[in-house]
Image (cartoon, rainbow, N blue to C red; front, side, top):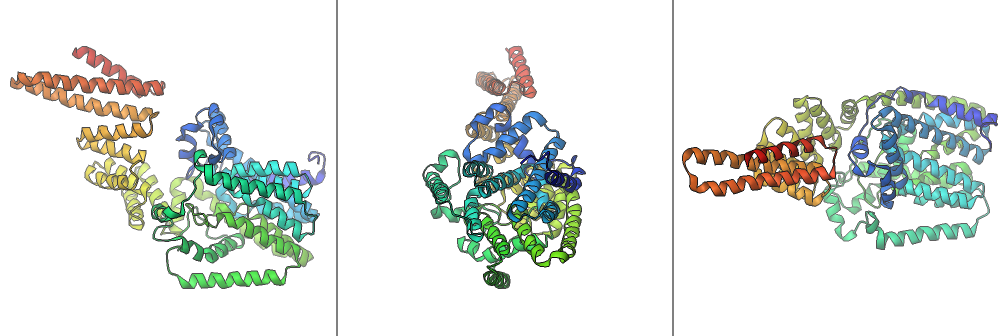
Length: 574
């Protein structure tokens, strides 16, 4: 296949580029959601040499791409956005290419470009840089599927591995291949399926016994209750609730494919509520859908569309509980099933297909164009979430956080407290409330929220850091120092922790120096040797902490300056 010489492929590529024009207006939008902490606060992205340290559990394809992004793009957001748009163009082109190879219909392949590219559930994955894992998963999944259709099994397996290393949900891909072969009466390559399903089985066995070594999360069913207590979306629920909510989740995902409104980056799912109406309605709707599929099983594209959706839904159904019960971004790969469904409609309606597709295209374009501007700032994004989902713990917390960062403390406090009312155990909310009251110099309130956070996660470095600063501001220097020492035990390569530990020792020394001068002026000379020892011990400990921190990060200017000033002070005192 020579894309550059074939008019059909060139036309497809041109249409793909045209279809993403709305996203070019967002090139200067800031980093959003998890972008900043994932890209800039993760020290394992700092150098190209970190590529060789990437763990299997870290979704290596995305992680390696982020390491290169950091190296070449630095903090220039428009380069990151251009890359995501480029990846999106690839997904659109591969969608149209897959449709052409499945159907042989060029006209519908052109339609598929816009039906896929303008779908609003894709917006989140393009606008949030770190969600590129969904784009990479889709690209390698389609390449694997396309190779399978062409009978190139080795190439198909290689792309399957790359999809798996992009995101683990790709584990279900071979099942889609098998279903496709059966529905379209293709010859079953027994050797290929024995090999690939054996590989999957051995991978599961390996993960069960050795997964924790490579950083994989392996849930222990005996401790599942503890997991549910700490998960903000599963609080007050149990595993049976996850099973009961499946009809609701399945129908909600289906609904988002056809009527994608409202669009949010955080949804409320009534997992722990005894809402019998929701469950029964969803179950009845699901039974109707399945009944229709059984009756229309001879319609190959309709059946394959439904089966593709069901199979790609399984990994995101939370049978293995994770953080999010529902998210638009999880629909990226399953959304290919919608294009297959539209082809079934195209087959049946023929000349009238245009009149069916145009309303959908207008709806998709309108929703996409109105959703993209919400990503213009963190405040606009989370205001949109809170407007349509007032029960969003994350939404109210993040809106409060960014109001606080913008200097709007009253609104920051309002939304942070609202998040606290929704969930008093959400760790990030407790940290943010602690920081907010510290900025207001209300250290007693700050201490309340941070100590509550420490009870929930005793080893959380951000909690300990903020708690240490609050202790310091309350004059509790020894407690402050202990917090910083605990952080160093947890993060021995944190130059910031060493700087703060040095500052804590310095405060103790400064207090001893003040007492030393008081004792001299009061004539209490007998106490002076003890006080002098305390003074120099604290200053020397501070000097050593600054020195160790400077050894870890030689470019930390504040550390260098603290070390120099303290060395001069000690020398002058002697």
